[in-house]
Picture (cartoon, rainbow, N blue to C red):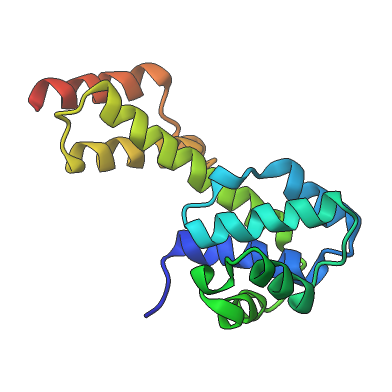
Length: 165
């Protein structure tokens, strides 16, 4: 089964980090840009947390050391074993886009937070309304000046959806 776009981006940033962790500026950027809770999957969070810990301790980060550390923590099987770690490395054709992958992971995390906030503000809002609002957010963030939605337009649409529900 093909992973969704969000999972693919998470795997790409983790795979790139695993391959390029010795390149300090890329590793530093990823660690500064992202937090553990920016990842949607538990396995990805565990791997990222381990990368951060190993980086802070000045340890080598590669397939062998990561698998050994996960095994020592009793977490290797929980995340999918050595196969999962290898698949992370195979999920990228080039590591030169690691910064882009990291920004996408951050963006996806923010979008998940927005969805949660919408539902918290109005628990009765339906999934269709949430998706329409998220479409407005994406449209606003697209950079297309014709698609820019002002905060007032955004809130008017949201309030309209709330009253319909």
